[in-house]
Each structure stands twice: as C-alpha cells, then as structure tokens.
Length: 134
Image (cartoon, rainbow, N blue to C red):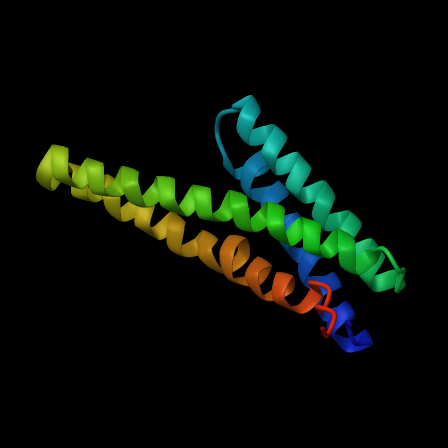
C-alpha cells in the first residue's frame, strides 16, 4: 500500500513526466509521425490520470499508476533498445561518420532512461499490489 507521501511524490513525478513527454514530442520534434504522436499522447494521458488518482488519494489511483508504469516501461525499453541497436548499426556500417550519429542516439537514450525506464520500474515496484500470504 502506498503511503500518502509516496503517493504525492509519484503523483508530482507523473505530472512532470507527462509534461516532459508532451514537450519532447509535440514541441521539440521537428516532424510529425503519427505512431509517435499517438504513443506520446497515450502515455501523457495515462500519467495525468495516474497523477490525478494518486494526488486525490482515490482507491483507483495505485492501479492506474501501475498500469501507467507498465506502459511507460514497455515503451521506454523498446525505445532504448531501438536507439542502442540503431547506434551500433550506424557506427558499424558508416565507420567514423556514423559514430557522430551514434553519439547523438546514445545521448538521447541516456536522457530517456531515467524517465522511461528507471522511474516506471520504481513506481511499478511501489504500486504493485502485495501478494497474499499463503
């Protein structure tokens, strides 16, 4: 069960992550690509709903937070894996020229890991319902 302090911390973190995802996709990306837009919109909506439930102290808040964490973790792991594979391919195929692009992709992956992998994993561990003792 979440303590009130943990619920507030995760609720505020969810709001900040939703703002970062919306800013990163809808403001910082120069081109629109509908799968990225749909994923970002869905993730931001899940995070806002999670934050609302956690900050309001509702009974459904931890369940929505866990669902949001699972979605963020899945997208985050897929993104970081795709970036790592693409960086290694660029570096291997294009040699010294590809290493510049690989460095940029590694930097983007390093920036995504705390918000799309680490925080959702911690939130999932914290909000997952405890197992019943047998």
